[in-house]
Amino acid sequence: MSDTPKDDLLDIDKFLCFSVYSAGHAFNRVYKPMLEALGLTYPQYLVMVALWQDDNQSVRSIGEKMYLESSTLTPLLKRLEANGLVSRKRDPKDERSVRIGLTDKGKELRKQAEDVPLCVFEATGLDIETAKRLVRDLRALRDRLDGGLS
Image (cartoon, rainbow, N blue to C red; front, top):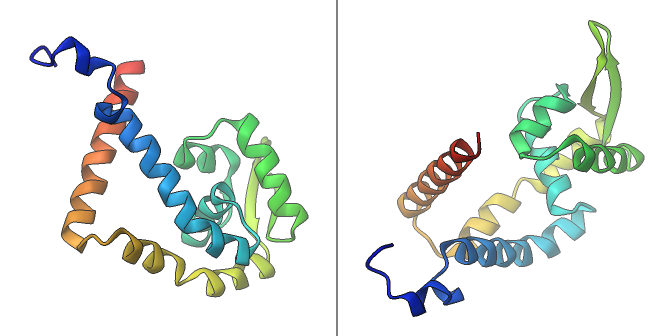
């Protein structure tokens, strides 16, 4: 960054963080019509994907996977529960912990959602190797940034 002219430091089009941020918004625009058809928001969809992958998780575990605080995750889970997609139950082994499980309706929704990842991938126009490399690089960046905050 030391070779960067000072004028470039405040050029938003050259901000890495803005590129990631705006790409996230572009992804949301691609997801939106598909998820509306499923009755889900993007964060709700991510929670459902996590549960389809591994049902009956603790709220804490889901929060860690989603990088969400409990104060953000709890209302989201309550909406999924109100929609009949998940159940929230106290863990009998630890009354302080709440476990989230899929209902039959939540399990059935998976079938309707199966095409979403491929549709989104196709919208990127990327080949599989480029996509894998980008995912790997973004995870590494996230981990470096998270490590710097500890």
